[in-house]
View (cartoon, rainbow, N blue to C red):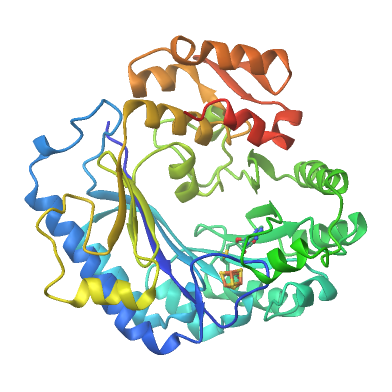
Length: 434
Ligand SMILES: C[S@@+](CC[C@H](N)C(=O)[O-])C[C@H]1O[C@@H](n2cnc3c(N)ncnc32)[C@H](O)[C@@H]1O
Ligand code: SF4
């Protein structure tokens, strides 16, 4: 069976740039939103035309590893930036374009990232009406001082209100639910303020929680202040303690730790894999299906400024700047003659994957799945060769130093990160980089 495809759409607008963030997003550019939405729709139509006009024999001829017809869509993700800055009708027009171009599965997960400071009951109701059924709020912290230092445009009361409004609008357990994003290892953060954040977040009963270690990004205010020694960051041991506390606290409260930075409830009302119940693959029912597509190295199409995609044997990405992106899609003179599916006039980087690239990325991605890990039989059916034929030396060394462990699953053996391996993930991943 060919796997279904996913779609990522990037919305690069924010009210204000948070002090730590280096995502491809721009403040005070909202006047370009109507043209941007139009360009997104042009890009969707263009890529779909390419897909239809290319014969199947032109596809997937480099290896056995790419397997989709790119027609059936089972997840869509509006990421940013702050997608919630778009209006209901703008979302409806993008969703109409997607539905005209692709076939959606009946249980397709359609997610949006939202800043809690940017939603209203009307906006959330319009998003549900447009077909969006999962919402991910950037919460980051429940502590007023921490939120101020991050330069967030909201406080925690706004978060409580936003979640309650989202519930009333129908983002509930019967839909694909609510995710809340958190960051730990923040300046001046203590174990106690982190514990309070987790406790207050659980009081909102989200189906899903993401908790990221703060990354200091070059070129952001946090990056600059830290290089001058002006950022009072917790030491690495304390940051590790925060992570370990989150692991224990969230698991004790019923959240399954299924990816290094992600936890979800398992209520069994949602199917993650058509042919395998969650208990078998170690994935809770409310795991994010869209992100699982990345972690399983499965294909996704990308639309929008700076969006990255992986399809038909290519990894590719689009022009970063909003204006350039719009121009490339709306200028009739844009060069299109050499473009193959899934590339568009907005593509600025493209890499034709080798089998080695795909195998290496497969390891890096699947090892992030802390319970499932890399399953030997899945590796063989994907690549046609045995996991230990390709990576015996790396796996054995990592087993010896206690960063990987072997797990016997029902049908096949798997290898996954140990508790220590989760803290030292980069050391593990480096072993599989070409
Ligand atoms: C693209 S943002 C989308 C959410 C929305 N824009 C907001 O911030 O409310 C996705 C998430 O990435 C995380 N993030 C962004 N920059 C980060 C950094 N430097 N370190 C750790 N996490 C970061 C935050 O948790 C954020 O909610
Ligand atoms: S609102 Fe989200 S995307 Fe925008 S700057 Fe802040 S963290 Fe980054």
